Length: 98
Length: 371
Image (cartoon, rainbow over all chains, first blue to last red; front, top):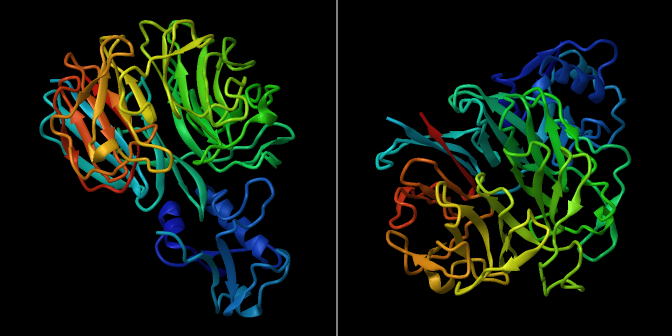
């Protein structure tokens, strides 16, 4: 079980409160986690990454264990603490705009 | 008693304003979809409780919401907008080729006859259609792949397809407008398109009478006379008698012929409305006076409508999708401002009153006349 912290607007869109807990088949990576999020919450398709290219949207970042892993390969294994659910996987929106 | 429902899209959510046929006492509901830019909300003529909302943000992209109960509740539908084939390029601001990139939906036009068919105008300019209530979208790519497409370029607000006009007497005919490419028409249900910009003159482009490149801000039509079109261009108010084949200027005595909105009275097809705006760059009402101008002669002769509107220190804008008319016996006219006011005139423009004053900047206004 992996805990995912979504930006507030995506929690509203997905109609969830607080952290999201998901199961990931196989190795936990940013890609497999977002795959699982999109499968459980199809209304989030296209809001975290592009429908076709699967590239992360530019105003979003991925964090794990206080490290910015946004620019690592999406297939990079997540830290053991995130894979075990001890630490959450953060999807964070840029602090910008008005 | 019949009533009206005004659908307002703003920079920070949607608002729904309802009143009975007197249009004096209003109920304000919202913000719906709070915190997101709502470029447009529009209802189906087949079932007015079916609404579509274009919800977008720089962070999370495009979401399409649908309501089946007149906006009380919403549910997301499909948001996958993919250009058909290899998109190619259009012109960037400096004239260099730039790839087509989907950014957002500016405008919906639900079918006049089929509940589940709806058209959507996109930035970068393209026309999409759904035939299942917004779940799946397909591009009507004959427009974008028109051989003028590589010469289209964006206006200051982006290269947006912002106007879609359906012709209830001719299901195959449709008009669209793009900033800053111009107006286009299809007569075969969207398979093929032709630019309809003859007669337009735009001094700010290298060839003022070019086939494409004109910054059309809005087109309006009265369904009883579908060959007569009215246009508010970047500068110039224009009229066509032949479905856009040829345009002539009808700016007449307007204080400035720049503006964004244009609309037609519900029962008088020669009565039209514009809101003159000062330009370049300033984009607020001349002299700080918010005035709607009405022509009862289809253009050229205009009268200012000021009663109830601020006549000093008013520096708001009225964006292109932010005017609408209802179809009650005494035609109601509505518009919203970037200052967050939504004004209503229940007497065809003679007098005005604000429905609300302090919404986020208004991007769009539509009105539904309810039984």
